[in-house]
Image (cartoon, rainbow, N blue to C red; front, side, top):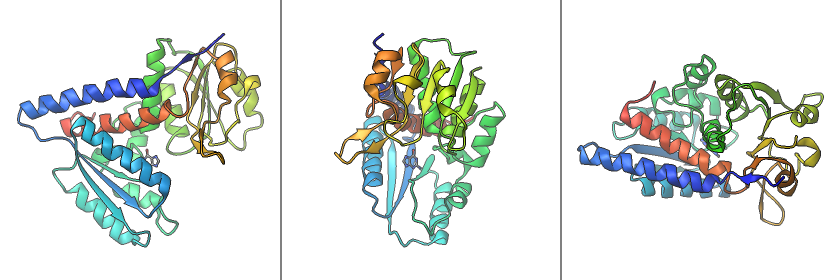
Length: 284
Ligand code: GUN
């Protein structure tokens, strides 16, 4: 079997064009463009690249954007006050504080400060709670993007066995909640799991979000499985690597996401979708 490629880059491009159409329609109605605020703290090179990408995305879809680049030494209080000011800024519909934050900043307290209706990352306890209760509001971006990738396969996923590897707050946990809503049987494997490999090997869908290149190889993948690779690690050769041995998955899986160009663009477009939902006042 040769897997089909789930081309997140191409799918995200189509979705951005749909967002652009909606922004143009709003403009024709005399409604202001959706506004996204991004706060970047410090000089992490990877974060600077991500934020540059978000700025480009905003330009492409016609969003108003407000980028603040703050010193690594910014205080907890200063950062919280900036978030609160953005909560009250009527030109801003979405607020995103780029991770990782410096060690002296308590990330949870920053997320808690964001108005849940402007939490376009979908990280706020309110939004995670809504997802857990099957009443999703603003949904976490990577899981939201992955659900759209799964939809793209045309495979009916209700009742399928899914193993998510990784139990992070931002990906693994909300991913499991999304899949439960979709009617999947979900296993979350993590660093204390006795036999992660066995649960992956029996899964119809594998979603790996660990950040360990080469973790998932041929022996882990059930023939015909859908393989979603959230891993995004820069190797010593400077190349970006996923968690999955791509050539192995290509031989065994029915669908596979490439790295780069799979999940990453879908995470970005999900954040734009959330900002548009917030701007349109369509938050459930
Ligand atoms: N750092 C890397 N990806 C993300 C993201 O999607 N949101 C935030 N807030 N920080 C990130």
